[in-house]
Image 1 (cartoon, helix red, strand yellow):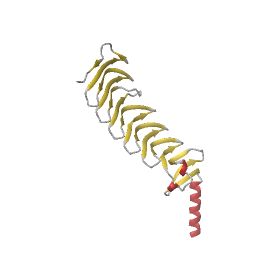
Image 2: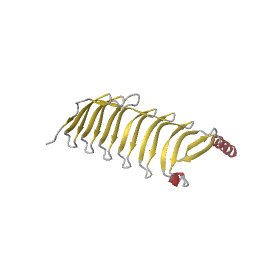
Image 3: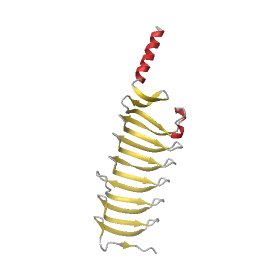
Image 4: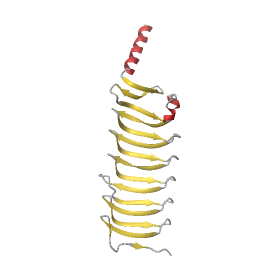
Length: 204
């Protein structure tokens, strides 16, 4: 009876693993699967090249996510060499699709927004390494900047605000000093500076 059970287990293991051209085992789970057709499947982990010769548990992870027929799906994460999270990007059919985040090496969010077919849509924000907002943009469905766009100083004060339509300045643009005082104002019409609209504010 024991020999029968052992034989069944050996057969099952061979049958399961035999369905793959190659794979790795990580903490008891099968990862990095390449099927018989040469497609990457399931959960994959990528490691730094200088650690690939080490046992899996000692390698430096630099990326992880899921494949379906060698196409990226779901959230993919990348890491800095020292181990901190570098990015989180959602994919669909191997293309960035949905919310994403980039991080500085110190763990602070560097950038966040929404990707669709390699274009930004909706709200976008970029930050300084101290966590203060640096840029705030809006993108339309075509991936062009639209609406009010803002830039900030590292101290959090507004630096520039401007109205944009389909990727070109269209409306009022204002510049401010790092103390919050208005410095300059001008008006654009479809990317062209409106004659006589420039105003320079003197500080006393």
